[in-house]
Amino acid sequence: MRVELVLIILAMGLITYATRVGAFAVLRVTGMPDWLRRAVRYVPVGVLVALIVPALLVRDGAVDLSLGNHYLLAGIVAGLIAFKTRNVAITVGVGLTTVIALSMIL
Image (cartoon, rainbow, N blue to C red; front, side, top):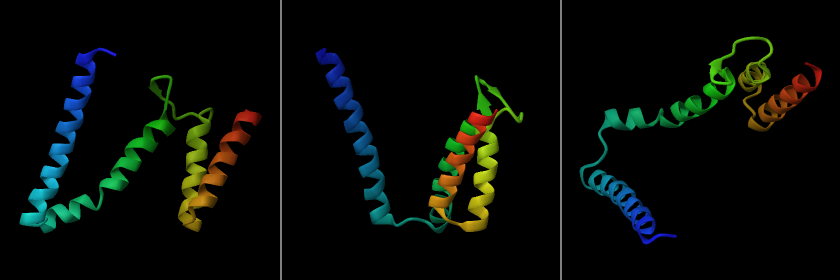
């Protein structure tokens, strides 16, 4: 590996580390404002939605809302199961089973 690449990777790691440690250090001294604390609570949900929605809706670079989109149908079924049971293992199991069954049938 070239020396320049190693230096770039190390510099990127140091900058990333410094910004995160810097933010923690500032918040440790000043405290986190209430408005920021309320906003940060929604970050995991936002990230999860940002990962799941494109995986369910986009096929071959275009939005696919047809009945041929097995992932969308399985996502709807899994969402209903999650709402009803509030059990992650059952939701994942039913979602995977639905995708496999739809792939074999259709």
